[in-house]
Figure 1 (spheres, rainbow, N blue to C red):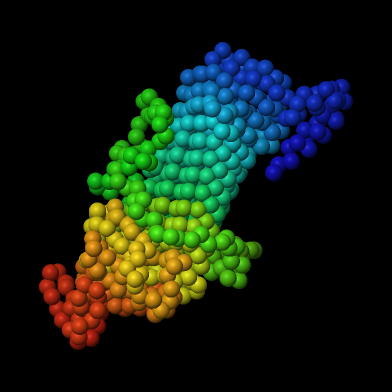
Figure 2: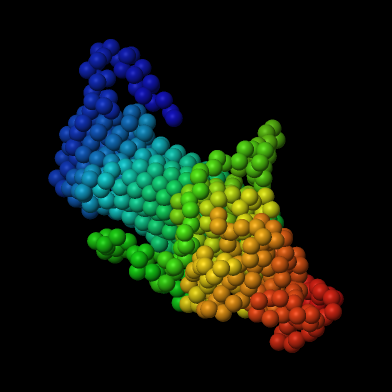
Length: 578
């Protein structure tokens, strides 16, 4: 990006006294060396040791071994620098452990079958860095070994340019802010990421692109956040978050309040949470980290490292394996919509320029499981699903929803999203694949089993509720227009869904669950998937547990008192208008 290699060649040419030998010596390809952290000895050109700091001033390929409890590797070169981590452990009591202050490209290779460890201090003094492993330039991490990074100051791993992860196992803990923070684009091709963080698991100020690999965000405020787009083409992603699971366009907002159905009142960002929603850093009562989402065997919390934010590891937040639909086929990949098809982009203006920034989420493949107490999938533009499998355990509070965006467009893949009905959002009528949204009057409680069956009684999806919910969004290639489907809770029929169009919804959006919507657990159908039936007013058809109207008057319960109406009542701000 900075064309430093060209500058280095000009410098070599200008210094004719050193001509070829000097240029060759400073070349990344030709300069190989070693770093022994235990004895603090080095080999290679352009590398020295100064007061327990290893200084690298020329490009090269350096193998790092040994252990040191108070040292740093500092790179300030005009060429590529590769560090081959080969069974090393490095802590720094006064700053970052590995600091690429300047390099054409920062390269980390984790040698196969080795365990490596990096940890920084909680105070950097005057050192201008922000992570235990930090680069001012592009950072690439690969290799088939294991690297554990603990960040005590801000982030565990960060770059002011791009970060690319190709393979290997990375165990990242941030006791300051983000597990991974990147000023430009985060790109993952393969490997495994296990992240525990006080703030975001992964935050990119521009795009996030995931083509493969496994991401386990065991603890976070927001799981994966981008300033612009999030694109998932493959891989496996498991997220536990006290706020949003996915959040695109999160870095561009003005801190306004969240409007219903994914609209924004005042812009993007995290915004101001509606009353009753989760605030950043709060862990819901009684929630514990599941055993199957613990860091890999053999990875221990470093001595003296504190649990972030005083939170205990939650248990039972992992979506159940029984959530998998039966016989789901994998649709083919689909390209992102063209500019003319993409809606909800964020417009940034200045005195001289006006540009549209796409802040959409694109899911084209992979398997995504999200357990969030904020929005499960939150886009400050639109959400496009063309393939893959998506399972969302959404919020219990009515200030957020399992899905939140300007619109949700589904043309392939499987989506099963559950949560509260207060901000519930279903698929747009632009979707070519069938989908339904059901808002239930009676909540499903933790441990109850939800089944979705076709008209022949075949189970299409089965899910054990990990927490209370009263809203279900479901889409699958096997759903067909004109067919009828039934939702059961613990074997009891609660809602019949008639696919009178490709997208239908049953029940009303509500705050509190019990008052809003139709009779029983179900409600009456509507073709408006964005605002749902009755445009969010406190009205619905009373009836039996399937939500069918038996000709009775409409009943609404306010403050424990039952009221009947011949026509739909209107309630605003908790007061009966008519």
